[in-house]
Length: 395
Ligand SMILES: Cc1cc2nc3c(=O)[nH]c(=O)nc-3n(C[C@H](O)[C@H](O)[C@H](O)COP(=O)(O)OP(=O)(O)OC[C@H]3O[C@@H](n4cnc5c(N)ncnc54)[C@H](O)[C@@H]3O)c2cc1C
Image (tube, rainbow, N blue to C red; front, side):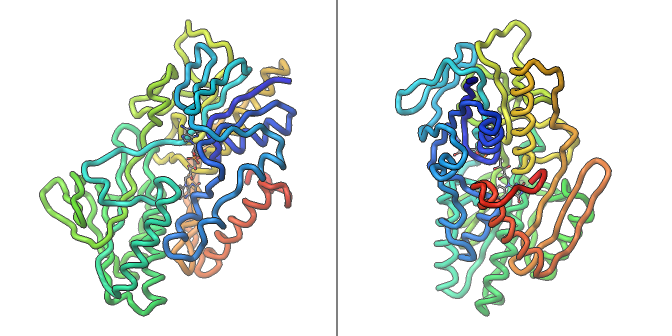
């Protein structure tokens, strides 16, 4: 039985593990936490719309259903050319036939970022944001600023959607509590047109949301640093707020940057269309190496984005190609033809369905129904990953 080691149990790693177990591979899945965190729906934890536990799936439960080996440990070092992975506990993984890297990404640090919290940080951050919001609601007034940054070295590593979603949900929470007129909400970002990758139609929809919800905008100015309760912009202007949520731009995972894997300027592992790591010509590795999801470089149009469903496409691509290579078939699959941006941007009491690919751009307002649909997706995701209901093709 061929043995695959998968590093990271997020969208990419879990999907690869499931696909390869179905093909009877021995799979070892390494994760630094014992649960799968459903990040797209974590936007509801800060406003208490969703309990933290309801947004997690126990990896042990997934292990029992799919039969992979689970190692809860932190990957400390990867030496692909020696076929070795070192874990924080001191254990070493070696002798595998294939290595799949799926450890997500890290964030670009700005000075003073400790004065902010990000919904895209460690899962526990969602609870810290919730506590800060609770305190402000108890005070019955204040200023809240939420925004995101980019990475000039890689336009795919921007995570803006969750900033919009949390802000809209906070607005909705304050309206429900009869407190909206006692709060000032401000959105901030360094880009002149934050969210433009979703397409011009989506951008104008976001603008409509901002105006309708009386959310102020501070955009187009580089963020220099943060101080307690303050955002400082390049031109010296300041934005004061009792609570600041800031989602930094993404960069490669430090363990991957320090490994012998080839990385881009932004620190993402260089892969080809088949999701195979692109080593220089004379590199000799004892096992084949793939990188998928947020850890991997994503080549394609300017609007491309690192997203959960793209991570799963890359996982299925890598799994297919691993199986094809082992069984001597010449067919290979690529992920680049499947690039699109897809999101159900939640606003607390509705959502906008946004889709973009090379040929189409769709924005569909879905009052009430959109919110329920996203809730339904979380349920579908959990049950289908646990094999309790069949999976819909491509989802
Ligand atoms: C708040 C939020 C909302 C989002 N909304 C959407 C959305 O609506 N639609 C969408 O498509 N995408 C969305 N995304 C993006 C999506 O979640 C990511 O693109 C996706 O999670 C990438 O999957 P991944 O497996 O590559 O990385 P991750 O899901 O980040 O998984 C990486 C895994 O590796 C583990 N890991 C990291 N370092 C180590 C280590 N040293 N040792 C062992 N394990 C390690 C982590 O614990 C984690 O489980 C959202 C993200 C966030 C944070």
